Amino acid sequence: MAALDSYVHGIVLDRAVDILMGRIEPARSSTKVGLHFNAIREIVDNSDPIDREIAARTHIAQRLALETFQKPDDVGNALAMVGVNKIWTLAFPENVEQTKKSLGLVVARRNRIVHSCDMDPIATGSVTPMSSQDALDAVDIVENIVRAIDKAI
View 1 (cartoon, rainbow, N blue to C red):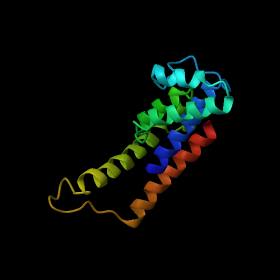
View 2: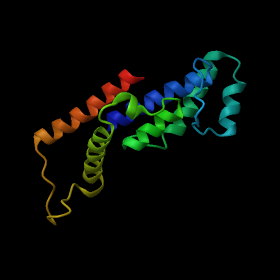
View 3: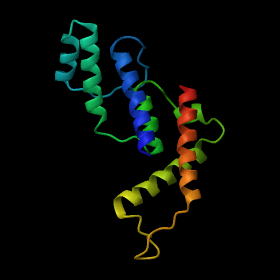
């Protein structure tokens, strides 16, 4: 899940910087990353293009560090911030809901592992079973999602 989160952060960061630098046009939708005025002033006050881009990348990265992009809706909203709208429909035109559900299950299991020691909610005092195939299936789900998103954008 950390790999998916990192991947989405990278896309959002790169596209946000490209929008600020004028290399790509912002979408007409509610495209925003929410920078403070001081950050914007620091970016635009740089006369050197390289320093301006470094400032933009720094401030946007700091802003994005406050969020995680793992759940399907969070991934979709993050990409929409930088003009990639309806990524799930673009990347998975034939099975949007099943793909989102599969990712949601992987995220939920990851969260149980991280936040509650993967304790089985039904069999009190025991850990939820996980086979090596369960783990490989989760990796495949995330890998297929990343490949499809990458192809779609």
